[in-house]
Length: 256
Image 1 (cartoon, rainbow, N blue to C red):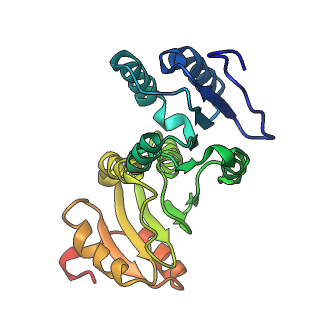
Image 2: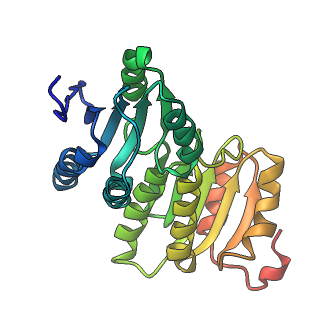
């Protein structure tokens, strides 16, 4: 492969690009157009980033350019596979992966095909399903796996579309067998931002889940959200929706 020439990998139905890195200073010229195209076309990106044995280190200028591109593109990425046998790259990637808003995995040089299969196996779009019940004015969220940043992007889009023509949502119901947690710290921060932007416009929040942690939710939530919060069992979804859609109690202090 000629020096600094990007290798593009076409995967059916998956916006993925691979790149063999030999001169990190040239990455901006490769990745930035890829990010611009994805943003313009409304696509998301899955990236295979291969660091060959010629790769030695980042210069300060190259590191800063990568950081600028990365910060602006984080929400576009669905997954990133780093392929390298270089010890410090493997270690630093593992340490930084929890800070990323998308799944990140490290593979050895001989595992490039496995890295591609992993990228293809990632779920498309949001990992949770949700439905806005227009008659009851309740947003029902079904959760089966750790929450991702794009889940909150999708929820925000639905909630914001409703709030463009309505003053508030009567309620929101989270339906989960267990409290799934977050995929990484980026997902947690996006959750915090979603709550910050919407909690004053939702009257009631119900958590229908069978979990000891779920029982703590109403006590913790009162310190962070304005909405009234109550727990229900996983099998009590209908009761949770009925409660979330009903008018607020005249005496909220007596709510259980």
